[in-house]
Image (cartoon, rainbow, N blue to C red):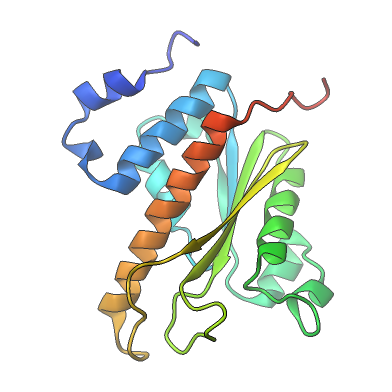
Length: 198
């Protein structure tokens, strides 16, 4: 373990108050796994609107292991900023809210960030007025140089009633952020890909 990499126990004892929130606790786990391996992460977010990167950046020393991230809500941004093919994002393709879109976002973010060893991407439908097939689904992909891991996370929180139901939408975004970071931590614990160029 690198000398400066804190253990989960060290973090728990030094930051008990901070780590009571599930998303922060998961973010600490992500930080520890990345620092243990001396890896860096890049993100590409649609439905979570940068909340994953923001939560990770709350952990002190984030610049050591977090390269940064893209927030790409619209198809044009996904296409122009990250090079996602329009035929993937538009009919008859799988669309912007799909595992295929999340996979492409993660892979393109990783290829555009030479420092990063890991990329996380997320698309999903927070609501309101989401199609039944995607309502509350958060398509999350963690990409390494040689493999990807994916999860279709289904939110427990109810959808917003309408365009003015900000409170319900915020609850869903909070839940999505926490579950995405927890999945990222799980992937890091479970995966040890070879370094680029080895």
